[in-house]
Length: 423
Image 1 (cartoon, rainbow, N blue to C red):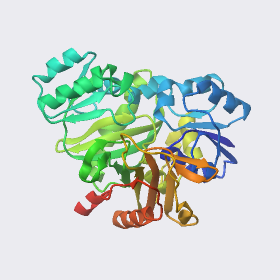
Image 2: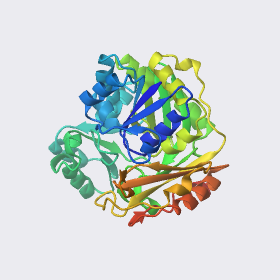
Image 3: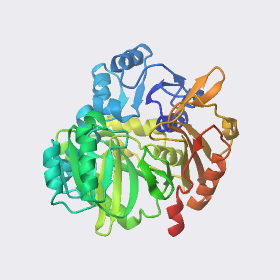
Image 4: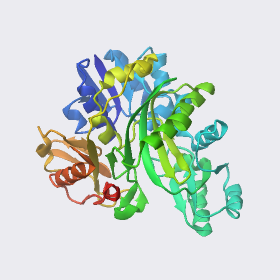
């Protein structure tokens, strides 16, 4: 069969690698892809938001299955347009992708269906938000309602910081239209855990847990980024936590979306906070996490195509997910200055070191193929992932492999997975 993957990051590279393992697949296309994806798929110069071109390409090439990796095209309704053209596609429709597309919607959903989350209020104008903050308990979390590349969240320790945050989101529009509405949320403390799941509208199957590192600098300092590294599984995601989440969060979310007339088919990403009062939902995403996909998918034993088709056909209840009994750690190699400003077009050396090395992966995120070789083309350049018998071995392997690759202004955090030392 022919498969089209929509996206251009490390997540889509991980998806492509997983798809390539399937005996069902003869040909993989990726739009627009990147230099790494281009080594296992044919990259086509169509942007992820060019819906008409994507639909036309899928029709002309007789694509059997399209997998939409990115949030923007999902929230924008690419799945709906492809289905309307009679194409088979994996991912939630627009009315279900709102679970990620609007934080206000997801918070209201959790409140209505009693899914554990932080207390909150939604605001449509800066004046009302500023008035509310005068009596709010600090610290608070401010969230731009719409998509903001994983960066539209501000943690404010003081009232002055919170007021400045409101101006940043709603008046200065730092996150663009995403800041037209805003959520003010109580600040929760605890361990963060990411849990990915496959959903077919009624049945949910949970993947292995992971933990992301959002801040740019060591010690969880600096600006929020799209993610600087991750590890899987999380030692803090215990059997007790899993049992609680299955009972009160996972199935409850799937059932709530169905009850709202928004059946969800695809991947739901649960961002959880393990508080003293039990697990709480921090956020939902309507697709694989990035870089979580880079540590979860390499450990999945199942055929990616079989699982995706079961989600589309509503037969996920017939599939049991299986994961390797090991661990994986991903360290993101970024360009110095990310996420604010950084240089592009810098030659990358050492990529050949990953060839034929079992258990080591170099997922391309911001790269570009040129006549002179592969160069940097984004803030997050590569995701260096390694497996190990346990998390400590995987972490050591990942940092060893991170030294194989060099480019000017290369930057990485040196404490990805350090929390596992506390277990």
